[in-house]
Length: 298
Image 1 (tube, rainbow, N blue to C red):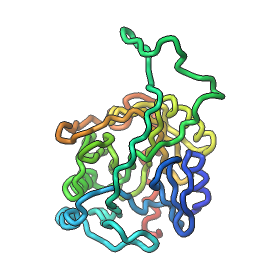
Image 2 (cartoon, helix red, strand yellow):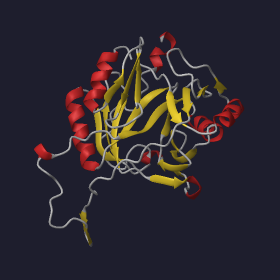
Image 3 (spheres, helix red, strand yellow):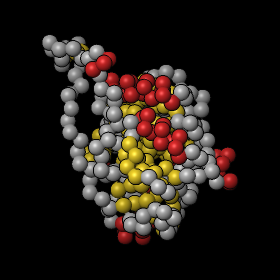
């Protein structure tokens, strides 16, 4: 980021906390034991790398060259543990062997009253604003990055890394998951002339918190937004808020879950379902890669 202090303010307004500072600024969701965002000082906004939890790193390292990637040394100031690789387009990934995240504690079930199925009886669904939860992000759910070749990026992460293709919309956007106990997608790709960072998405408890947290961050950030709405692909409710550098921060709730990829069948959606099932009009620059004009001078 060109201004790390400004980036810290944005992510703190979004509900994250600084876990460590210095050359690298690490931020995480309250109560989490691992970082969600690492901020690096630079001349321009650009994607540095994506970190993923993985197993079998030696096998992955052997497969990476077969699918157009390469194993590389750890960047300066970053951990030498795990495996650093570049995908066929030059996007940097850091694979680390870590325990699974501790499951989040259950909250009050989001109950709705629908015809023939009354799920909430003798109580109000909504508390007064003064008593309503602010919508704190619980964990990082997924990231979406730009790529010049969506399906080649999918081939790389599925064949070299062992992920699964959850769904895609033609060759424009694709969503990839882990092979077991995974949100519908943890890494997604959108077509662009070059690589770059589009958004990071953070889980909140329910659709009400998506709405509350999104509106609060819009007011604090003073930038553009898209939402409240619901995706077809993944089924999650969403609200996106633009950061000062043109990329996006998403709050989401109610994502499809894939416990065993062998039981899942990917769907190739039409482009009309690639962004939303319903919601407000899409901002004109929602899929613009603001890093493209900066790549040669970064």
